[in-house]
Image (cartoon, rainbow, N blue to C red):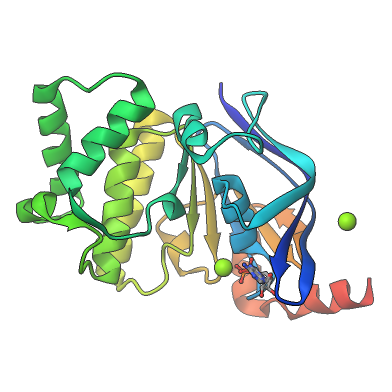
Amino acid sequence: MSVLEIKDLHVSVETDQGTKQILHGVNLTINEGEIHAIMGPNGSGKSTLAYTIAGHPKYTVDSGSILLDGEEVTTMTVDQRARAGLFLAMQYPVEIPGVTVTNFLRTAKTAIDGSAPPIRTWIKDVRESMKQLRMDKSFAERNVNEGFSGGEKKRNEILQLELLKPKFAVLDETDSGLDVDALKIVSEGVNRAKENTGLGLLLITHYTRILRYIKPDFVHVFVDGRIAEQGGPELADRLEDEGYDRFLTESNVG
Ligand code: ADP
Ligand code: MG
Ligand code: MG
């Protein structure tokens, strides 16, 4: 049983105006197979949390910890995090000229598993996942992210998720800019990963729309760098009706 634990995490970032504290004590435990949605207003620090888990060098952990099955993640390199079983969509946002989707996936899989996947089953797995994500075969031979549309980038993320089989994934606003069809396809991919490999997921979103397709076990309201409230899926419905104002007011007063 795998578990990702975030404990009293305080994070700051260097800006032109000096050091700015963004996360003020985040506590969150995600067990294998659980889907946790983080919702919150713009600027509340959701992406900072994602980047910190990813190991983005701009973000400094001032105190607290992130533990994956008891191992401290915050001192790991980005590669070590991937090998430990974390999937961070932001890890590969860049275009990689001259590297095809197929070659990239195989290299990443080999690095993460420590040995190359058997070629026959690998090719079959790649084809099967691409088919389920309704990706054209020609996609496999394109260079990573080069000229990809928003929807293609998201599908490519989910393709990686399905094939690299991480223990935990962080998806930051994967739903933004997707039309309903693409959103469904991407959501089905995430749900398959949960079913097939017991993926634990941190799903960061500003809108409740994606939660119609990916059912969260827990919903956390993120305000001013910390979790202001948590609940079940019904909390997302309440947020849709009421917005974040109530939490903003409370945090301003408190
Ligand atoms: P969210 O994803 O919830 O919209 P962010 O984590 O992107 O929030 O940002 C939280 C706050 O931290 C914002 O005020 C933002 O301007 C600031 N911030 C985040 N990253 C940086 C950065 N690299 N440089 C300067 N300020 C940043
Ligand atoms: Mg504090
Ligand atoms: Mg963000």
